[in-house]
Length: 307
Image 1 (cartoon, one colour):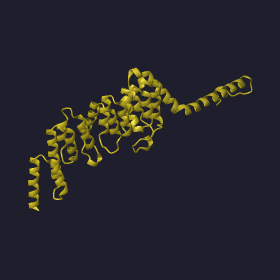
Image 2 (cartoon, helix red, strand yellow):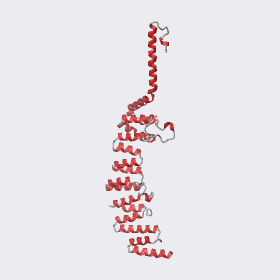
Image 3 (cartoon, rainbow, N blue to C red):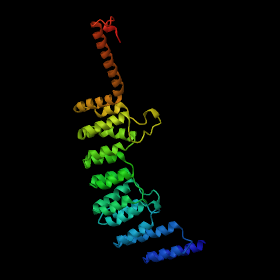
Image 4 (cartoon, one colour):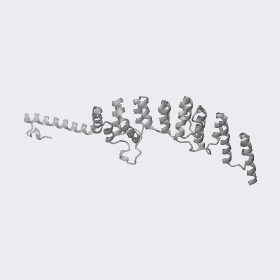
């Protein structure tokens, strides 16, 4: 066995000296004696040789076959500087594929999206984010797309990967569509709606005061969306009044706060208030009738003592 390995290595060295890397690859693949690391070593040598000859498109094919054995940073350093963005894009796309596990990190995703942006290839960017066989940091991808002005792609990622905060921020700051933001918040659970309103509630109140006030009233009284994720059953469908107080904690929104307070009080107290008013009206009618009867001599009991 040792003799076979020695003969194989010597033969491979001869092929490398003659720059016959493709032949060396075929020989190693036919022989079961060669392990995977040896095959990947030949892939790397072949890729390096092709780069030295300026054949970058063919070289990237060799580096792609070596994914999992060859450090991605080695390949990226070769292609990141220069006019080889298309080849680097191919390598990074393959690096994100699920068949390679979790090799791609946040920096790789950022670099790939920036490659699409540099190539101005919105079609491939859209195709990439719509694939189900890739893994990447969703929040980071949304931020890159947003900064580059690809708002449709950013909105799609925010919806697909359940990033409600990013969705609302894009609608408000980039698309200037507070109505869509409010409609989206109404479908969130109490926890997410509360967290988002604590951050952007003042901005929403400035753009859509009436709709925002109604949303806050619903949040504090009876939320129509999904319940809170917390275990407390008493507060699963409503928020704390502190949320409303925080959102409207601004002198410029004092009038709006007054409206919100009145709407909340009316909603919470209209039943007992109705009962109380009804009682007062009936009592006053009884007092008036007794007073009239007393003046006519039909009743000797003072009207102020009648109930």
